[in-house]
Length: 255
Image (cartoon, rainbow, N blue to C red):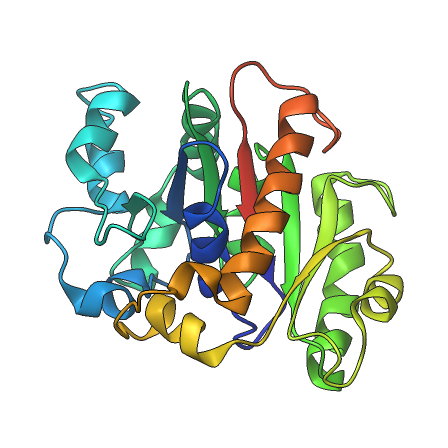
């Protein structure tokens, strides 16, 4: 999953989707600008070595399954397993993003949801996105957010070599109707509309600000919408509807 600019709820959306995924799903925080999951989920209670940079270093001497067993952390019962992101911006340029994507795409028995943050071609994350079966451009519904997404969509399509309108590159609208509906936003971006997630501050706070999970959290507007969307995405990835065939289980890039 990727975004154009600002903070349209990419990380929150990725966590909500991974947590409601119909199969085992791993959330990989691949934001080149540095990760926020450690600070925002489970009140920052994370093992210091549970992260992407450490897992990449492990690949020099072990295979991916062994590295993930050491570095993936599930911070709460309601959360997905997470490979937390980079501690600082400067680390991104040294990571082999293409290899990371290829290795994740070969995982058996789990899907990968990658939170790739704000998209800039120079950050290197494009190599990771090229390995994904589905790339999702996440946007809010304000005029500023839509303008930014509409400007990025054709650039992202060219970088990924995805023709306009192809479902491998789709739009996800967070908080539709404020003021523009999701269908209108997708048309402006010339992208298929993958789906919509509601503006649900209380549920989002569980993912983004370490707020406590309440008894009916799974029935919140955000989690119910995420569950339906996750089912549709997972089904499309399994059947190759995202437009890129792959052996085993693929990655879903969320930005």
